[in-house]
Length: 59
Image (cartoon, rainbow, N blue to C red; front, side, top):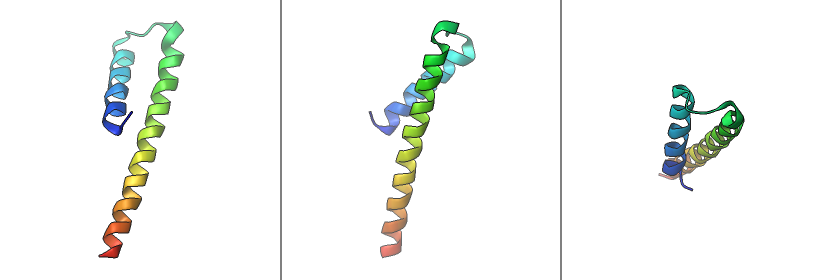
């Protein structure tokens, strides 16, 4: 999974939850998946930020 795919899936989950399209039995699973996706995306952004800073500092 890449960043864009993770964001797309996260948007789907948020939409389902906001619309009430998630039953109580699966809500916990959806929230855990959303939390995992947020962490995944955050880690990617931190890595990119470090890489960009490193590249710019080399100039």
